[in-house]
Amino acid sequence: MKLSAMLIDVLRRLPYEDNVRWLADAGYPAVDPPLLEPNAGDTARKHGLIVGCANVGGGVVGTNDEAQQRKLRDQISNAIPWAAGEGVPCLMVPHGRDTSIPATEQLEGFKRVYGPALEVAEQHSVDLVIENWPNNGRNLMFSPETWRAVFDAIPSDRFGLCFDPSHLVWLGIDYLKAARDFAGKIKYVHGKDTEIFEEERNSYGIYGRQFDTSPGRGRWWRYRLPGWGIIDWPAFLTILYDTGYDGLIAIEHEDPVWRGSEERFKRGLILAKQYLSQYLV
Image (cartoon, rainbow, N blue to C red; front, side, top):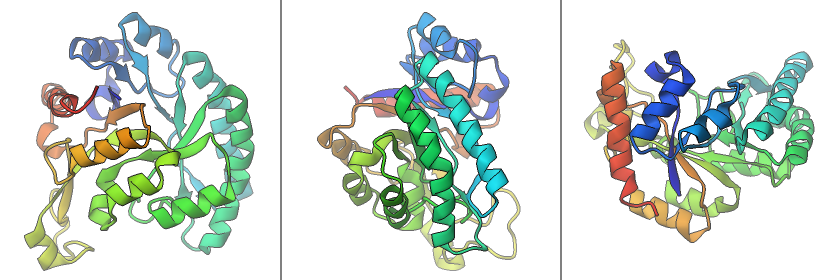
């Protein structure tokens, strides 16, 4: 397994090649390129890096709005040839839901979008992956129950998970069991941790603070860089090794302690690399 980095936060405002050059100097072997970035693969390879997943962006898939589904399906299908041409192995795709309709109807929307899109993906040998991000209940595939339902309804070897253990932690889901149970569907991994404040949880409950939800307050948990939260990384990585995963782990830097400036953000990426590198071969 090797490390990649997502170009988010302050890095999103910098030229792609500048980010690639810095990551190479920092010892990262891979980069997650922006969607449809011209010459993304060649630029990365010029600096000795490989490319990871690109993010198609959000959108409501589980809906009865067929025009919206058609737009998303076309957006994904049109990005697949670019990914194949640039050597991008997978595209992270949306799983937004219309919570006003039953989950069974939402599932029909997934079939209408991903059935045709996966035909294109299979032709170009590109994986479509869904990150298990709950998005405050606005996304569907956040739990083993929902993964199983969607994957059973849309069987394709090119359809899988971008597995992020940090989301499962605060949802109360056993991320180690989930990783082992769905090992065959894990096609990409996000490196992100979660810190839990038990005193706050005991005071607010799982829904968080209700009377002061200003920025920086209201939650009983927060995302951290790997090694700065409660995830057991040796145990998690052991499952990945044991079940045959040999892909990338992309650092998704959402740690508020190491944000605020370009210098501080990059220091966070270096710390994440230093921590995880001890377990990677």
